[in-house]
Length: 571
Figure (cartoon, rainbow, N blue to C red):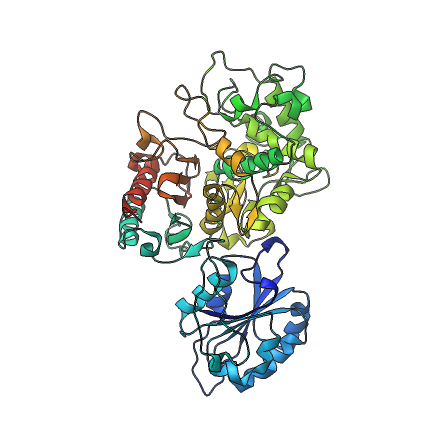
């Protein structure tokens, strides 16, 4: 990889939340069978940021390209016929980054000197193309050089630093055992054969390098004779309680950095409807550590089911309207009055009689209300602006059917009592469904790759892509045990069980490690001592939540233990 031009230090790219990128691949000439990078290039770019892609380009593409603020052109051949393509894109007056795979282009295309950046890729392969994309986004560095004759006035090679964002490479590049993929494959095969889940995604990363990213199985348990849909790396999963860690906590930490929140606030400082209740003086530090005597949960939906099994029509309708705007399930819409009724239900719920650690959903159901109140933005808008957008985490979000086709989303359970159908594309958790799919305790969807960006943000103490999104001191506080040894919890994050770390982490997990599980079969865990993390996304509740084999097999603990043991000493 040789970076020959980099006007105004454009590379590595910085602000992904303001990026409007399209990849353009010049058409290969019929006389040569050049490797076609068009699909692979676009997919590699989308691992980092939202992007569209075109091949050609054709005249019909020009209107779209004028709306972009960055164009990434790949020249698989780089011969004289590509001059027209380069000129065409330069005429659009957008920033142009050119990937050149043929050294001849460096001398035959003087127009390259007008590009914002030029990256020469010496090897004509998909792997080299992937690494070039990593250089552009700062996942990998580049230190290649080129003779002045070949550089042809483009300037001397410019070294590029990596480590700005996640990189993607083989396990050895991350200081992990070379046979890690085979070992993980074996674990996942055993779980699939045992029927623990229909399919899933696994990521293992160390030193900022995704050393393994694989998908397994199918999206759902198929009916006899039906054609199953395989899980791909872009399949979306319902995160369940990972929402607490991947939505509520980033929002609260960001608000804390803005001076709008603190763990020692009381509940009534956030939620006016709790004033005058037995919850008004509860301290958020106790609440986030699950020791504030809040009830674990209440199945509020049960109060809306009539004796004949039908839902009360004053609160649920088959079509959306101004009065019924909340997507509860496919073909089921909830009244705009439901969130307020749930908030009142939380306010009037009794506290646990005894103090001590009891895991609770309640406060997390309320945080979206406070985010709206404190910022004037909805919960999902605030997260997109402050966290997900800057990360380039395009799949993270709520109500995924608004942005993605149903075919990309793994279904969860067949709900025979509330929604009366397979839950597919809407949140599995019933209380979150009654809140319109947007809650702080459940409702977040995404794929493993985008989740990895957020986990790496935690591991890099709030910094990612050159931006400090959360202050390091804030993350340190939230990931530290608050009331050890009586309560193992950090602020929201889970910590290893002191007497049996393998219960929720792994037997070799350090006290500094942290993570969380989700009811649908999701999991992540960070091991700072080894600078690594693991992610497991499954839909183990398909077709029923009564499937407890994931826990019985101890797969999550085994996966984390395998990753820790795979970390090579001294690397």
